Length: 123
Image 1 (spheres, helix red, strand yellow):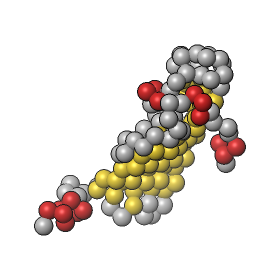
Image 2 (cartoon, helix red, strand yellow):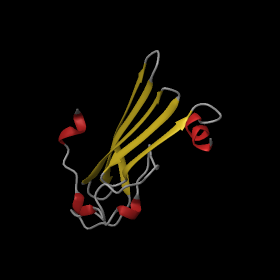
Image 3 (cartoon, one colour):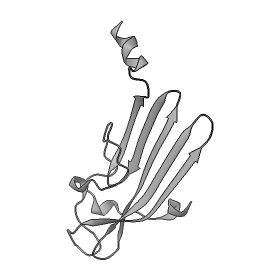
Image 4 (cartoon, one colour):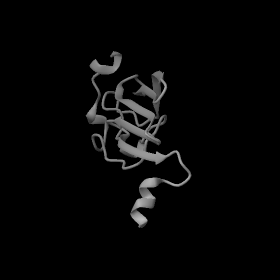
């Protein structure tokens, strides 16, 4: 994997891998968790670079994976690598995100109009 050996910078962050509950971003940055670039001291914006989108489709499951780097727009310092996954399995859309900057989040939604898991709780 190309991104596996990338060193990310926890010194640029308020908190490493914050829990984001059900929030799963396929693009963007969680700037509230960004202290600024530790390398050049810039408080400027972050850029998304080297975005890789992979889509695996077979008869039962669809999976989409998006990976990109968050870098300092001033000096190019790598702050974090962002991983987002979307899949459809067993009647549910599954979302997940893992990124030192944006945090960790997971979400699941039924593809049916009425979620069978929620209906079971009502009775």
